[in-house]
Image 1 (cartoon, rainbow, N blue to C red):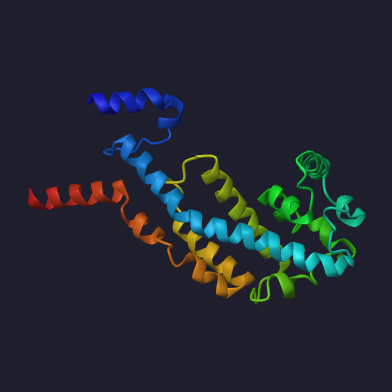
Image 2 (cartoon, rainbow, N blue to C red):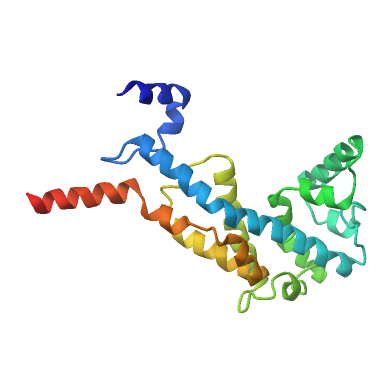
Length: 226
């Protein structure tokens, strides 16, 4: 192993690199490809996370007749959230108050993607508090998709998002290209105008640069040549 590679291996745990083994391919090549894939998906994840939290917040306000439903700790919302999210809201309110930035906008930004996707869950269909009536305003272009299917899609988005944002491996996901296409579809559900923000999307190009694909092509060429 070259000295530079040895230095890199010293900085990365064996447990981490153990997830990047494939016959004929260097683990570091897969590791770098994984980083590139994660980077390529960032514009889509960024766009969908910002869009969904703002659309939900804006549309929930009139429905509850409370534009500051987060800051006011709206009772109907809180009682349908589990204790974890209730505590998170209270924690962020306390922390924002301490630094003099307690307002609805800052509170919206502090709450994670997991919180906003929790608002799509079954308890918010109870007595039609939020769903299905919000579907036509939050997801006006999700034609033919029920709130249950939308919920499942965003569960998948959250899983991918968490994997990437916590530096996990995604290179081995067989349906990664499908996840990419479904992300774009979900963005369209909210508003097709958002596609302008992801014009820099280069996932398909990066995906084609798979070290495994390159290895297989070289192996096939050598086999034919011999």
